[in-house]
Image (cartoon, rainbow, N blue to C red; front, top):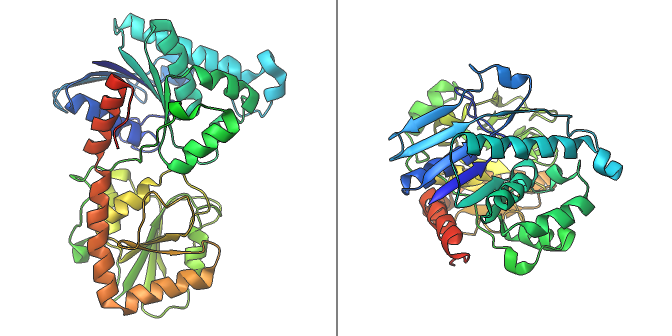
Length: 386
């Protein structure tokens, strides 16, 4: 099967950031024996920097061949929130140029897909609709944004009409399927949720003592960690509040943003490259993320795969991922509840061991191979097995 993947964000060499999950999916399709081309258009004139945005072909690196294309397109900026301008909306101009560049790039490389997959609603997902329409093949959209932020520049009215043309939408959480049906009128038969996956050959428990040396963590410390943007909604700032007066506890936090964790016992706060995250998780005793809204949180799955118990929100946003065998769930706005949960895991060794082992077992349900196989089945049959 020939699969075209369309991405608005995709990692450049040496900078594995926002597009990493798309890359994992692409490589998974290749390992499963399919021909894959990823098209990630780059705004002109940034696209002229070919040393930063190269076209690349990976032959036999993942059991097959993967072609990554970065054609240029003219962007009029989608940041202006002006959906009422209709055809004069600069986001829609940019979108049209975006998907046309995808079509031209596929034709130029003589790649005529059997199915088109777009990641996030706009631009990737919306472009999948247009590219699928052009080549007369099915279009599938992976939806992961918790607040449908990518729709805002276009307006809900535009999206409500346009998204009906997708063959299927694949939200990565059940609550997103409900929201897509409610906000955009997507028929329920076009919606099947499928959680994100993790590569268990990369994310697994490392030697805790060795991993802690990098962050200069005291040997006898109980380490609270978190990964994510430093925003109020992610709640990492509340984790900082929770740990500030717990004796023997230190915090390490991977991320950046306007609401960082502030506490005297924070021993590390800053960015961590994606390929270094397994060691980061393994340095932690507990992963804490009192988030207020999510799609399907990759960081939670990755932490569990590394054998780290999770403390997170007792809301629908984590219900697909967590259960009582791997986590403690709290009111994400209640700092005292977060603090008590951390204390419980620090003091109750039996509970800690139970949840740590449970996290490893729970993560097996989210192996990336399972997700890839189910996506391929979906593309081939139009139905998603349970």
